[in-house]
Image 1 (spheres, rainbow, N blue to C red):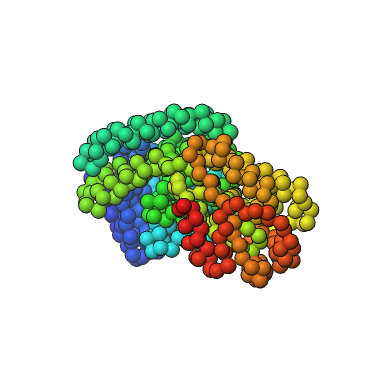
Image 2: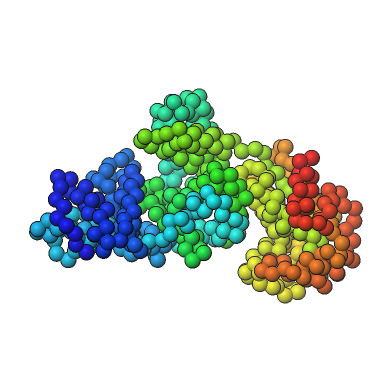
Length: 515
């Protein structure tokens, strides 16, 4: 497509003026968005994005050749996440008579643009969050999408990720100290000291994770504004292309940006849902150990947001308060409260999983407890999807004993990482209840245990299991009736009347945990 002759002393400004002109897009209205490093032009169903001729400590787009390489890199990186969005790189050419054209066959390229298919900007998750439309179903889908994305990108075993974090901590310190009108010096120094201490404590873990392929060429900028709903599914886009070092990170550090962004918006339940689904999808036992790094990772992400917001030109009172809020969140996240173990038992149909899922976001530290469910673990042990029904042979006493042993081992891992866990199983036998209660004896001093046992009449339980669809539990009405014969022994756990609505049971569960 060609346009008018737009000669200018600044070749890039001429291109910007040309791309902002509806005539250059067949008369379609143009929406222009400028960032610190790019200018984006949205016209009709097409988006063209050029790199601005800028140089920062973390990127250099100062020459046409470098901008071309950056455009190529953006396509290469993002096609892995969003092949339907990223089309390719097109030249902006100037003919001999000075006429500019998009993808011109004749003439010299004077700029390069990333060519993308336009999506509905109102469907990015930051906009949906502002409208209160990130529910638990979307959080679950988001956890799946991130797990899938991390599964397709290459691992790097010699990136020196821990050293990268040390550099980020220092950069955060220097830049926040320079914003003394927003961040108190002693608070900045305290955050830096806590971050450095956490990094040194975690360095062996992070080094081992790098050797075990948990450091990958990730998205790198995984906040809600860089995820969009297309055909009802979350799609990641706008991954970092300008710095291999900033994007070659532990997958948990990539995930931490998304979790922090949800927490900052007070969407704790969604953040908890994302984390639990991510862990369920990846099935890496080592990620339970890596929960120890989550406070540092999320704190660093919040600190970066604080300093970047503070550094924006022409900042106003809203931006300044946002920077302070992110900084306060960074301080909060780096000092998590003591972990807790909660066990939720009860016969089939009492609503154990429903209660555990609802309680998890309220159990600190952020973003809430890891939910271990016996029904899901049993399916994992047999390597079948959560909703696929297992044969009776999967429910022998030997298999059930193995399920409870693995639940206990995973709960120990999570508590050892300093994170809370909620274990959801029938716990019909006194020995099973005693075993899970003893886990806290090996945990950090002061780790609390709460045992909740849900009760409901048989008629209620039978009615509930009869209406289940798409659930990991294989219990049906016959199983619910058979469980009436169980000898539960003395119930030493706090009994919770679960015969009412889920909200009523939740309130009773929260009251029990507060005691």
